[in-house]
Image (cartoon, rainbow, N blue to C red; front, side, top):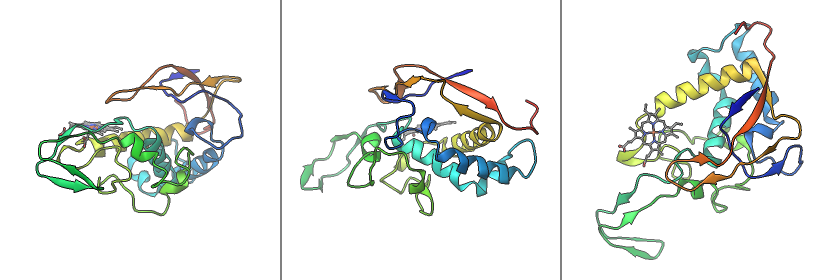
Length: 205
Ligand code: HEM
């Protein structure tokens, strides 16, 4: 059993209300497992060059970053000229705080924003180029994250291999607590446990 630092608000495992979290969304798992299995083509490991075709995996990660951005509030900016925005006059020198977490859950942008639905990111052009202002987990503009390519290569590769090699579930009767602390960086209030079951007959890890 491995301990993961992942978080969510209290909800009983097995509730059949809408899916709100990647760890208890049984509907995602077959898609991801089928994709990694087909991509691996019998090899024991998913390689970096395999990632290009993994559309469900990429959409899955994007949906996690929408609901749980690692940096929920961007680095503060200062406006360099007077602007009028949504009827508000914003004078030069105003400190601007961008709340990415709130944008990711905005009902005017996303349909049922509290629901975890990786389908949102299938067949659309939203990507890590920071020009899709409805989804900014790496920020935007001159101060946007310089590590995005590195971060995504590692996350995609690690997750693809984990999904390929393990079935991970919550321990029986485990309750998840997804509560998060306020702040510029995301941190969870509580730990929880995840069961990893080896499902890859080819893998010797
Ligand atoms: C999932 C992983 C990561 C996420 C979600 C993330 C997100 C962010 C965000 C939101 C910002 C602020 C951008 C803004 O205010 O517009 C930022 C800044 C930054 N990130 Fe990342 N980051 C990640 C990984 C990394 C990695 C792996 C590196 C380096 C190898 C890195 C290096 C930086 C640097 C240097 C800045 C400051 C850029 C500046 O202020 O000019 N990040 N990151």
